[in-house]
Length: 116
Image (cartoon, rainbow, N blue to C red):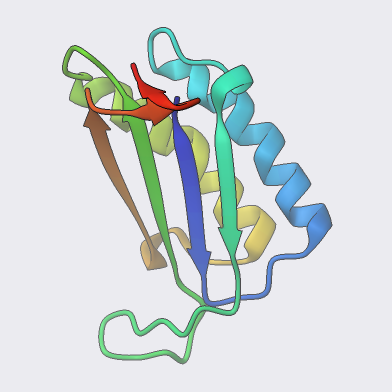
């Protein structure tokens, strides 16, 4: 039950969304018990973004949220960064030093009229 949401200051074409969705689908397996079969991806392009006080270069903010009953190790998040950030940087033309990724895990997750 993970979701990866990309907020980018650049446009995100359908082809770029498909390419990133494929990378994210494989990368999410880094989190124990997670797979593309439960992954939701959202892409928000052309989001006005100031980074370090300026909007003169592209920037992105990425959120990765996952359902987890047990804490997810920092090493897992770090490995996920190593898979997500280069893909977003390459696909959207955004320098890695202009991308933030925020990771959260929760044991409260609703689906299909109930909670896990």
